[in-house]
Structure formats: C-alpha cells, structure tokens
Length: 140
Picture 1: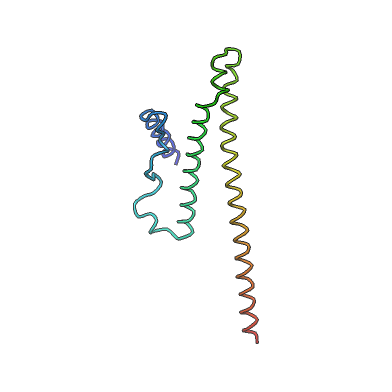
Picture 2: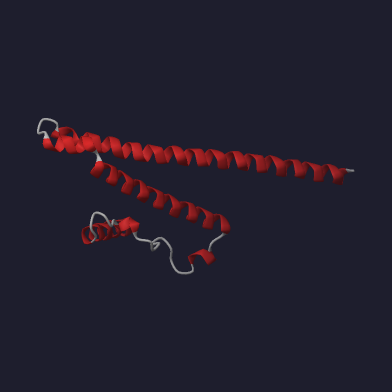
C-alpha cells in the first residue's frame, strides 16, 4: 500500500509539473478511481460509498481550485507582496483563505449528513412500526 501511495504521489507531482497552474491534475474529467467493470462486482451499498467518495474527491478538488483562485485575486496578498514589511504575513493570509474554503465545505457536508441521518431515523422508525404491526396481526 505504501508503494502505491508513493507512486500516486510521484504521478501527481509529474502531472502537476506537466500541466499549467490553471489546469490542475484534479480537474481531469476522467475518473482515476474506477477500474473497468468495478461497479458490476460491488454490492449496492459499496457502490453508494464509492459514489460518495468520488463526489467528495471532486468537492475537495473544487475547493482547492476555489482557494487557488481566491489567493490569486486577493487584494490583501497583492498589497503585501509590494510591501517588504508585510511580506512575511502572506503565508498566514493564504492559510486563512484555504481554511475558510475547507471549513465552508465541511459545514455543508455536515449539514447533508445530518439530513441523511434524520431521513434514515425516520425510515427506520416507519419500518419498525410496520414490523410491529405485522407481528401484532400474526399474534391474533
């Protein structure tokens, strides 16, 4: 597993050097996480997990692109670049922008998960009630 991770890191480094900064490797529309025929072999719950993972990877890639664009267009960073006294604070400003982008995504994800949990609890309660009705009918 470690060698696979290292080769993927090396591949990402190669692709990031190969492509311009505006065409990042994670913007590739081809899905690198799927193998041919993989979905047919998987149980539906694993297919859903895979879809969620792929959506999450895409979302993180979009967040990184957004952060990159915000850093490039940030007036404060541009001002700090021209002032030697404030130049040392550029990294801190970049960190703030990235953390803001990621925390916004995290909040959206938590909200979606809370809605899913609420829905699942409701479905479970309904099915439990149906099950009790069936048991009661069979006891009569």
